[in-house]
Length: 352
Image (cartoon, rainbow, N blue to C red; front, side):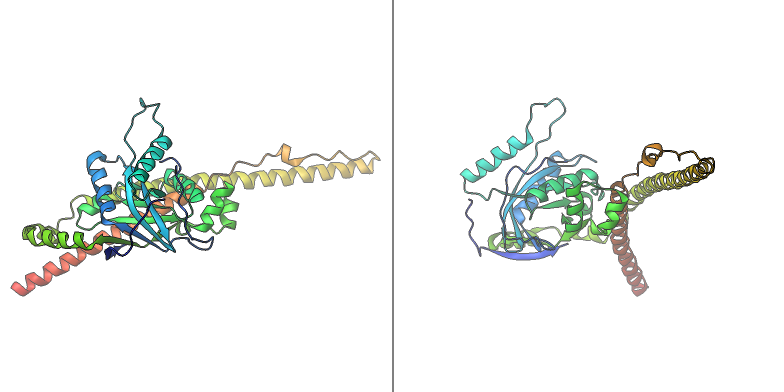
């Protein structure tokens, strides 16, 4: 097991489809609400994630990797990471699980924390609430109770503030995923809504004292003009792109609602047909009884009237969750821009 020295750093300010895990970390997390209450990330890990996207991420292409570390009580400490290599369909012989095992074995040989504690993924304008992420995080969290997924948003980070968030599946959603029953009845019974699918875990970025001194030195040497970019009143295309993605998801939601309404109409129509059939058989049996004839044999109505297949509601929940994410991004972005506009208005009035 990898050794680790405690008390060598100071804490900075906090910020708010892969294969399953190849290695398993052990922690003290219980089976209650959540095994992890806080995620502590080394600054080097954050830089590795950013560097990975800058080298291999292009447009909507996402990058993914493995998080390594250990669990201390209810705190998950992420001390290292390594990326998944980009490979095409031609690389049919590439085995991701074998690659993870070899990487962790190499890290163990050089006495670096090698326990598997989750994975990370970049996102394009906050588009990460997908079925692929849900399935991947379920496989991780089912094998390693304390595992998390880090979502890095490079576009929001380019606006001036680091966007790195940690998510876990809620215990309710974990139970539903274990049963693999995503019918409307099962989701209603489990009280699953788009607000109860993912839970965000607070993040604290930790650096050593030497790195803090280096950052202080670099801040003094940085050009003052670069800081003025944060006061730019231009909204670029960030707001327009978020609104376009939001409209696309709303269209998908409306199509899903049409499918569900069609299912409800077919179900109601079938119930009426079944009721009419039962009434006709009852009248016919009464007539046969008056003529002294035996009643008609009982028939299995489930074979005569096969119930329509209900649409999967998990996709609708994911779309609703993604819509909620877009709305939060738009809210944050517009709040910052409105603050800049009010500040610019006050400065202009003061100068006049």
